[in-house]
Length: 228
Image 1 (cartoon, one colour):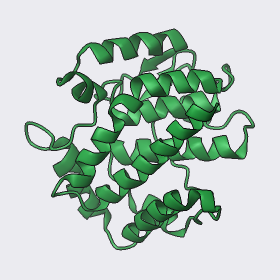
Image 2: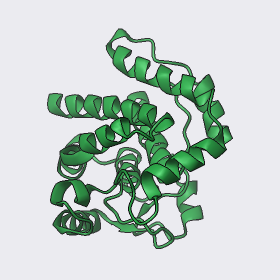
Image 3: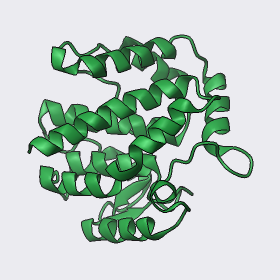
Image 4: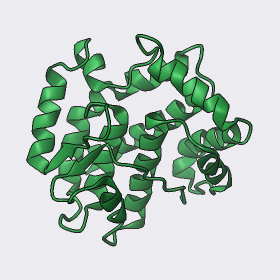
């Protein structure tokens, strides 16, 4: 499946990447990897952008014209992508900015939380975040100081998964076992609650399609990790 790749600014970056965000972006695809892993990385990049800020007109157009997967085994993903592409053709960036602010920012407290600690511990900045920071440091990642979101934000975690899949100039792609351990510990325990909260929120229109697509993609990731 060919997908629009829109890495944007990474929320979590490797320590050795010198280390401005602009420089980090230049390392987007430093190594040749398999087509399937490239698609996975592109999907993670896309989801990171969706949940970090509302998509602009350029990204909406790219989603509309991106071809769907043809394999029958990807039928559920195809349907979710088709719904997202259709919605991308009838929405405006201004409407999406408003929807994003209503759902994920809000006044005082967001209607939908995008932080793993909230779903795992009931509060922000709790033990799951501390454990995540320990694991990230061990793998050579640190939080980009230019952003306010903590490392357990869904966009930051998608950034990490993308980096693990692609590697960078100094670091080869992580093994599937390393990817699996990180995903099952820090993403899988709460990600479907977050997707369902987005899908079921009464103010979610475009983003219920985003979350539905994300949910299918994460389910496929889990199935693939279980088969390794």
